[in-house]
Amino acid sequence: MRKEKRKFFTLMWVPHSQGKVRHLAISQFAFSLTLLGVGLAIVILFFFFIDYSQMKNKLVRLNELERINQIQARRIFSLAEKIKDFNQTMQRLQELEQRIRSLAGVGGSEINEQKLGRGGPSLYLPLKEKIDIDANSPLSFKLIGKIEENVEVLKAEAEVRQAGFGEVEKVILKKRDLFASTPNIFPVQGWISSGYGWRRNPFSKRREFHQAIDLVAPWGTPVKAAAQGKVVHAGWRKAYGLTVEVEDGHGYSTVYGHLSRILVKKDARIEKGGIIGRIGSSGHSTGPHLHFEVWFRGKTIDPLNLMVEPLGSGD
Image (cartoon, rainbow, N blue to C red; front, side):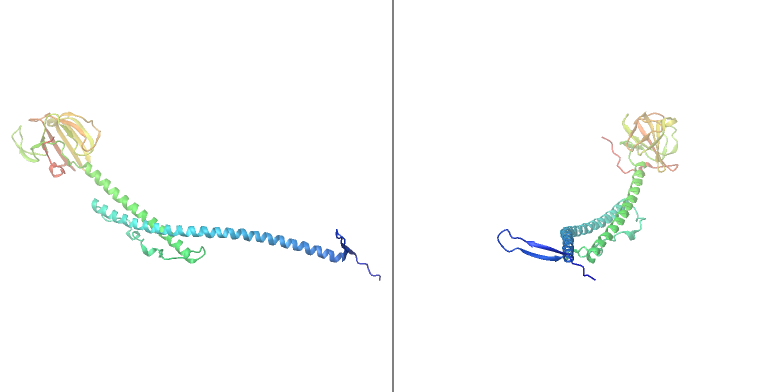
């Protein structure tokens, strides 16, 4: 068989100046193999350049993340210290609640006290020591975990404190309402002409029980409500003359008799110390004064036993 002729390419170098022309004969296979190698090298260099660019960008980003991580580490330490300070504030609030309870005469809280006072240094890492913070280090995760744990503890304690103060507020409001409904201030300032108890009736001259006190004051002197409440009567009542009766609440009611003028209407709500009428001598009366009765749960009581202010002669 006749041998197939191999095909060749001839590469020639022709210098611009005088010189020998050079040539190189390359077979088609070798030329194709050379082109393939050059192309492969170009592709490898291209991917190397892309990979290098990506690595360079990642390095820049990693440096930025490291800088941010250091900033966040300092913020984490600052936050941990603030949480520690806040825990001390919560402890002071607990002590304040106890003092308020004592002043208000309120007993222990119905809230589970085991939830209280769980903060303190035992829950915190030794933040004053120099600690190298690494984003992947267990210590960083431990620190963050402690902060999260402390936040949950303080959140629970804040809820307990809120509930505790809510209890105290309810009791104080109830006591304030009880105080406002208790007839413990004098309707007028003057002097007592007849006290609570047995006496001789100035009209019948018979010995009878006087279930009120008579407060003498000048004609027209304003009469104040001794307690808050609702006006259940405002008008004439037999021997009492012009009379106002108030249901004060909490079992108390008050009667103001012998007025010269009534300044409130039936069913009106009045505040403690509000003006309800003026001193007079209507009904069975020997002169201008106020007939002042206090009832508690259906029975009269001595108003003087409730008073929290002294009785004077007025301005």
